[in-house]
Image (tube, rainbow, N blue to C red; front, side, top):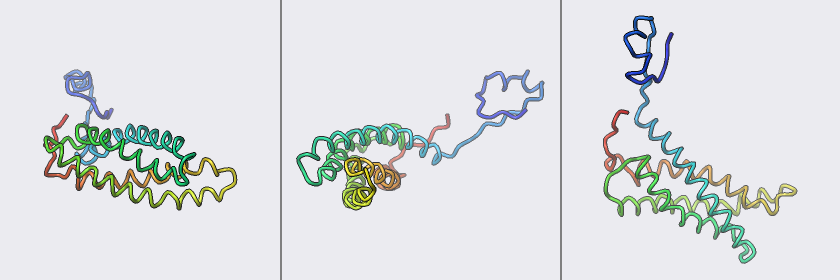
Length: 174
């Protein structure tokens, strides 16, 4: 019997398990794979928080501004950056020190994403509004679509700019 992901000291790794003919093989994931998994987990929290901010700001600003959803996108991103920064710093890339430098780099990566998102939103909203029955929901749907591209853009930006390899602490095997 072949088992995966057992822990030393468990029943399967005991002498009795070996005598019973149980073969155990631990799975070793690369540090990059683990970083991506942690990024996706922290990113899920950031996404919920950031999209929640976007929805609230869109709801509040749409009656006041013609393109309230664009302003909402920018405001939501600004509010979410620090929240996301600490999650990425502490749990994903696990860098030490350099808070101000990394935060500024993080803001730079997000600024690039914000500009691309703000530029894409009117285009995507226009396409969605052409579909019957989506006039009022178009900014929300477009925000979710643009968000997918922002997630990919920000991962590579954070990995290569905000929390570059030289800033990371050594990966410790679990």
